[in-house]
Structure formats: structure tokens, C-alpha cells
Length: 317
Length: 52
Ligand code: SF4
Ligand code: SF4
Image (cartoon, rainbow over all chains, first blue to last red; front, top):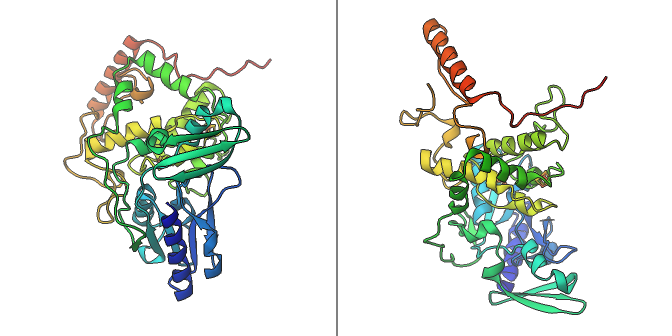
């Protein structure tokens, strides 16, 4: 990981010096442990601020669109798929981005680590070495195998290597095989309507409608989001359970055929709501009905903006 | 929608051309019958406080 940081700094400095890009978007160390923040670098000498470790879970594709300058962006597998989605949706031109590809071995779940060290006190420092993450507090030190504290979406990720890149910072990592990314969705599908309702109502019961999940998602770039409109008002703004549920399933629908399961939404939620349970069902449908996973190719239109004669339509009477 | 707990059958889709009057009538009848059988929708309903 340290070499990743070094490599990213070198590349960023070179790209800026050569004038290949006007700006590089990467990560810098966060003010709190396990929360690295996006960082915009415009001068080669600032490249030393960039870092890379297992706490770079934010999706940097979210910072790319509606910009004029040529941008270098550090991208994990999922980020690169969201960049592809942006290009396909004409939010940015391929020539405008220089993708610095990072082969990814998963991001750490700060919430899981936090829960595992809750009794010990607040985590003040975090470090990482050879697949192990060590956290330190005032009176404790704890080490975890990174594999065991991965973000939920990373445990089922099938595209750890960037799908597009202009240069890679390292050799591709081995992709995970033999996992079923939709096991959790299938479990819900097997429930009765009442149980499903109860499950999802329970899931969003704590939602405070802060919209951090929406803001963290690179797909949510509408100038005015449906939840913010008041004329007409599409969805109630209270935390009435029906309003909250409406927000959640509509948010998911807006991501249908576009969501890369990057996990940025879940990571951003201050109350830990597993919002991906909504989008994952649609991702599964896309795989099953249209043989589609978002952001894998620049050459194909997404299923929701194209018609194919073989599209399933038995649901229309 | 059924995934989050709407009963199957409560949400229906049809494609009816403006020239298909009889199909329109049939579909309306069928949908009405099917929904009657399911009973009134009690889920995903927002109850507003009554203001005098
Ligand atoms: S909905 Fe969540 S998982 Fe899907 S692309 Fe947006 S932030 Fe990523
Ligand atoms: S980030 Fe969490 S609390 Fe905020 S709107 Fe999304 S699900 Fe609700």
C-alpha cells in the first residue's frame, strides 16, 4: 500500500509537470482515522499530499463531471466503472479524463472496525501492513485481518481491477471467483410480502433523510434532485415511514442499470443504513433480464435507454 | 416494488393503443376485479394528522 502511495504521487507529479492534466483527484489523509478525503491537486509539488490505503472507499467519479479542466483521477475497479457510466451518459468526455488505475483488494469497513473496538475506546490512529490493519486508541492496540473487516460490497466485488485506465499503478490483482454477489437479495426474495415489508421498513427506520447517500453517489448528478423539488413535490419530506420508503425505492430506481455497487452510499450514511439492499435487487434484475452489469463497456448502451426485441415484456398485459 | 413488499398483482402494466377501446375496457375490468380481491391497500399509505 505504501508503494501505491509512492506510485500515485509520482504519477500525479509527472502528469501535472508534463501538462497532461490540469488537476489530479486522489485521496489525502482524513482528519479522523479511516476516513480519507478527496483531494484536488493542481501543482506537482502538492502531489505529496496524496495517499493510498484501505480507507479510500469514497467514489472519486463523483467529482469528475461538469468541469472544464483535464482531470487525472485515481480509480479503483468500481470508480472506473462509474467513470465509464459518466462517459456513456455524456457527463464527461473520454479525452478529458486520465484514469490512474488502482488494482484494489477491497476497502475497510470503518463501521465494522469501530464496532469491534467499541469497548476499547475511540480509535485515534490506524496503520496497515501486509494485509493487516492496526488501530490504536489511548489505551489499546488492535490488529485485524483486512479480509475480515472489508466493506460489504468489497466482499462480493467481481471487478477489482479498473475496467478502463490510461495507466496502472501496479499489476492487476486476482479477481475474486466463486462468490455469489446476490446471496442477500435471494434471501429477501424468498420472503413473503409481509416479511419483505417488515424487512425494508426496519432497514430504513433510522433514516434521518440527510441525503448523504445520494450525495456520495456518482450517479446522482441531477441539478435538482426529485427529493429537493417542491413544485411539484414528488415525495414527502418528513420522516414518516412511507415518505422515507418512497425516497429509498425511488433513489434506487434512479440508479437502475447504472449502479456499480461501489458502496459509497452505504459508507456515507451517518446511521449505518444498508441502502445497497435496494439497489442490489435492481442490479440482480439487470444481470438476469439483460445480462448487464453497469460500467463495464463504453460500446454498449445501458438496458434502460435502449430497446432490444428480446427484452422481457411478459409483465405487460 | 414487489421486492419491498407490495403484494404481487397490486401493480399492473398494460400497453393499450388509443384505438383499442375494448381492450381498455377489459383491462380496467380485470384490474379492478384483481385489486378488489386483494382488498384495500393498507401499506405504503401515509396518514396525515387531521387538522381541525
Ligand atoms: S447507488 Fe451506492 S453503490 Fe450504487 S453507484 Fe451509487 S453510491 Fe455506488
Ligand atoms: S445517508 Fe442514511 S440517513 Fe441519510 S438519507 Fe441516506 S439512508 Fe437516510
